[in-house]
Length: 371
Image (tube, rainbow, N blue to C red; front, side):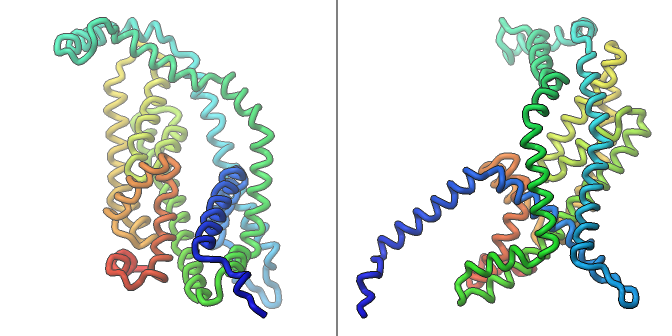
């Protein structure tokens, strides 16, 4: 039987391949809600895997914890950690939003009118600001527009409008996470099922290395966040700040954005700290507040930079800190904040793939020699 008439020419194969890739990309975008839920479930499953392994090793005579029970305990532990964080932070966020609402902007503006006018005169004198621009009005408008984001009614309306999708998302994430923890080889079998036979060995090594490195990375990030929050809370408490857990949590969580996170987290934490004091006393001088905040934040950040981050990033994903820095900047240019968050695990996965399929290249040998 002549099968030549069923064979596609090379150009047709390329067209079909490109159409297939385009279809996959479109499907990922169209079902992005499910993709995001799946990605969150993958992260949670990575974080729960060490506990799952520990539970699986528990034996007492003939008794041992079964797979389903181990999965249930692991998932319950993850839910408990997340629920505890929300239980602690939500009341603090509401309290801080009320502080924003109680700010007397006009009284604050009157108190700082003289130094603002001096700064305005300086800017006008050296042509750093247009003559017809009023600095006090400009600052007031910017602050008021920023505070509009923290209106309780707006936040409540947003939460209510998204409540259905949030509840559905939580259910989907828990469902995915349960089975990804329970059936550790579920994703493995799916990938192997679509892999050509001649690449089975390479893909198996990729999956094994990726699970180990990325799992260690996410666990390391979680530990880093907890340590940062603890150190910042202690530091802010000793310098006399209120609402220290919320401020420390915001600054600590932003470490998931290496390097740039210090700017975003520090700015947000400082704004919350200042508004907390001004809501109780609009005439309070903010200079000592800023000095105390910067001192505590700088000390903790130095501990993070020289002790925590080198150990977590370099040891968990086995890459040079400079290498990580460049990758994060490139990812930020491509995908913004989300790109920076996903930069390190994505780069780690690509390095593992490159080691298996491009190991003859000198450049690949250098960046993958420690994997």
